[in-house]
Length: 89
Image (tube, rainbow, N blue to C red):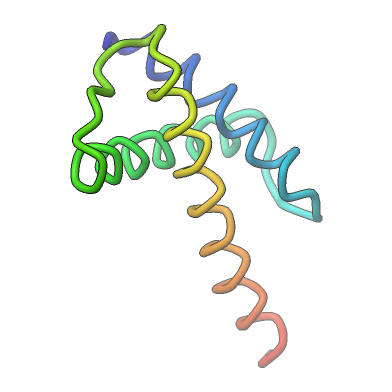
């Protein structure tokens, strides 16, 4: 996948992850895009490791689903870390 495809996939996957897990999250479009890109990398790793999935195609449904799953996982981890930090402060 090319650089622009990673950005588009990341932006959409990050936005969908924030829609799946609504709440008060900081950041705008850049943070959402980074969330999706990191989620896409994590989802691709999960797909290759656990499911032997081919996630190299931009138009593959498995690429999109794994990117969204990865973004949800990254968002949940972020909320756990930030939520713990806020409750102790």
